[in-house]
Amino acid sequence: MQSLTKHHEISTEVSKRELIAEALEQGMINIVVNATLPKVKLPPDLLGSPGILLNLSWGFGLHMELTEEAIEAILTFDGKDYLVSIPYHSIFFLRRKDGTQVIFEQESPIPDVLEELPKRTRHLHLLN
Image (tube, rainbow, N blue to C red; front, top):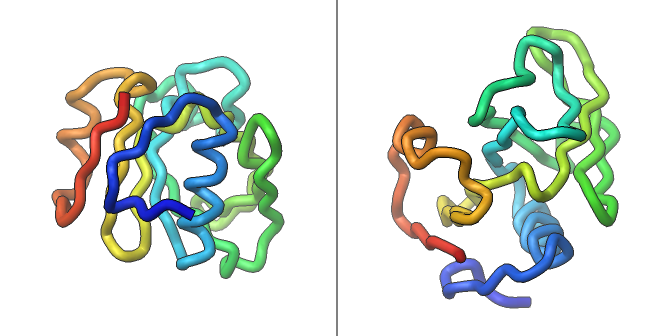
């Protein structure tokens, strides 16, 4: 598998899925989701936001599956479990456990959302 410290050309959603799967094997990851897009299923109070930061990990012990089109998982928000669906096209940011960050520039709704994220830029890669 390719290392995220190198520039990646992301041409399909399957490629993004593979990057996420590889990152999850290393531990917890952070993703940012554009919840304004159709088919995103999150708690109602989060829908409509262009930048929702989510933590994902196989270690959470809850259901999570990387399907062909989306991440299907049970995630906990404010102490309640929700079945969520996160289509790959709605994900525009990925941070691995080692701090490596990937921005999927073409999916980014607005550059300002990225500015609001915590500043951990040991490795930052823009992908077209």
